[in-house]
Length: 269
Image 1 (cartoon, one colour):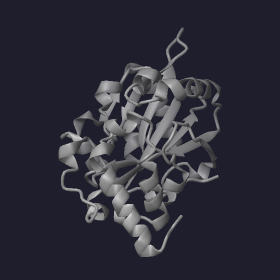
Image 2 (tube, rainbow, N blue to C red; image 1 turned 60 degrees about the horizontal axis):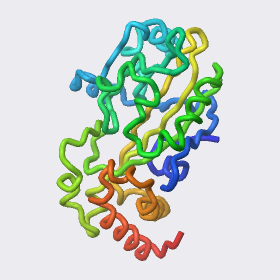
Image 3 (cartoon, one colour; image 1 turned 180 degrees about the vertical axis):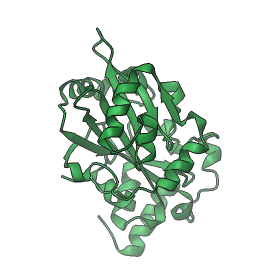
């Protein structure tokens, strides 16, 4: 199975609301990373945000192994400059069963700060996600423990943002950020953000690499099928999850826009 490299191709593979799930698919090596990264944008993304790179002493060897895999001289920061994706490395400390974040090179985060996450175990990393502990934590722990070198798995998700920037760090409460959104202008004022995530274990150090490829498009540029899916999905987010992402502030406008778009296109799917 494959995952695309645009919002339109990723959304059909993403969860459409309801209970959280991993939704992993096996990827071939050639489908691992974005084949044509904008390296100038990557360099600019790291240059203008000092918080982007967070390293612990434990990340040196895995970072160098990763850089060598990518044909880059250096370690984790240099590897992240050579690809479209943000890169995170996780390992188990000696005597521990849990995986911790030991290094992050994240120019384009989705509402999180690497400096606040570095060193944390998986469950603490995901603590803000409503339903993670109940529905995902045990399965994720088991997957991480059994992941073998050579295998690559991917998944994708989606968020609604009030801006089209790749780095999304909301600085206003949702009712202010989405105050300008109406059913009439939602196609231009709501932005659909998708993370194309992959997981693989490095063969030498055994660290697990988590990559995050960011893709953003205005709602109105998406296919009719994807607009309709989002209109339905925003109504069925896990309780609490939608609140954290500001859904109450934009949901009515998105739903009305999706219904109007379906009528205009004669689309009912």
